[in-house]
Length: 113
Length: 108
Image (cartoon, rainbow over all chains, first blue to last red; front, side):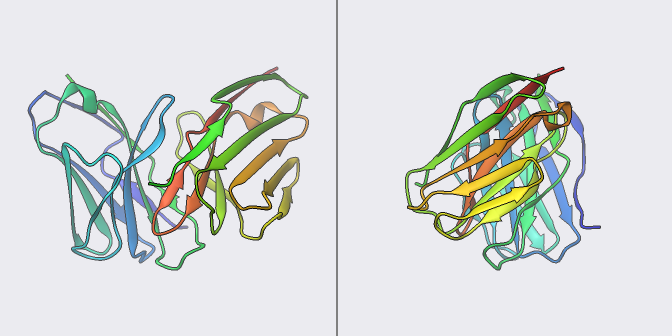
């Protein structure tokens, strides 16, 4: 059974903290993605990576950075958490070949207080 | 950048009624995928359409890809409470361009 695993299901952090969200996939996928999901706004792409050490900005990269040191792991970093980053964060992976679907992790609900 | 819009944003139906969500892209899509997210869950892939005018069925669900490959629809016949969730379309290029989603509530 294919798996994308996010390190935390729920997280509460204080304003100004540095926050790490971890994502691991076991399908040997080249592509990995970080989205945030907010009511009425759908899934908005923060960053994606198509290879180790490679990254591309998505639609809303401000306030975030990413790291991909190993193929199976893609980390999202909030440099200095703010209350407007309270959201559901979803990690996904897919093979490099076009036409294949994305597999999502279970999501991390982050609350910044 | 590429934009994919979905309507309606929310839909409440009585159990047994039909439901349709529409997806429109600002550019031509090479393919379109549909995902379902159950309440409290994560998006799960349903189907992919590739050809212009393509129609695919999964039991009570019918998926269509427009002739110009810029729009798509998902139609559910005789909704059931198990259909509750948010339905997303996604264009697929170097990345996935997700629509805004349609949240379906089915009233028993």
